[in-house]
Amino acid sequence: MHILKSLPLFSTLEDDEIKEIESVLVRLSYGKGQVLFSSYDRANGIYILIRGKVKLYKSFAGKEQTIRIFSPVAMMGEAGALKGGNFPANAVALEDAQVLFLPKEKLTDIIRRNPDIAMKMIGILSERLFHLVGLVENISLKDAVSRVYDYIVHKADGDGKLEFKTTIVAMELGLTAETVSRAVSRLKKLGKIKKIGKTVYVL
Image (tube, rainbow, N blue to C red; front, side, top):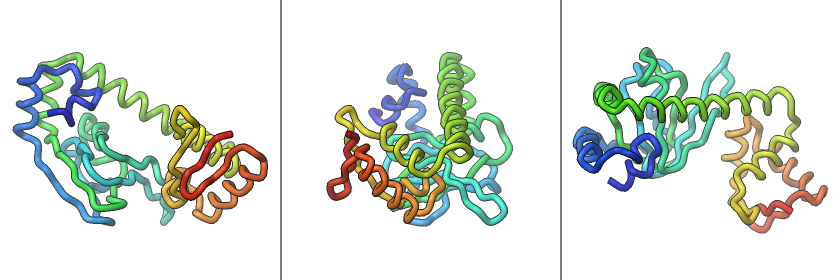
């Protein structure tokens, strides 16, 4: 129950409503590299990631653009489940992952009986839209050093510390690992950050 309660979408539901949702959830496991869903699949529900990491991405003319890297606990596929049709993007496990699957029909019923859930869903989708706008701005207007620095500042904790995995950052920013490494070196020389092992500190 605490897993669903940790999600903004379900945080205000009563315990009996949470139990009702839990009764229809399906637990699914995926190995590293296994596809959860693709843009060719019908959007048949919401995936709730409870273990592992999942990459959401789009493919264009043979090129791949990472939209987001999800870590637990996170929802995926909610836009497609509401809109109908196919999922708007692809999702693949970056490591062994487990998800809870909520069928679309059940989600629709929950929204119909709890109108405030619809407002929360709008808020979540709006946040995803702002994220995509920022992604487009980064790709279009900023150089690699600026993009890596903005990423570090945004992701760092309150003490300015971030566990930094070059391959993950590269995927999220649509850069190569080599480009990210060069950007980190440049930021260190500029005195913007310091890096000790796999931890980056904003200065």
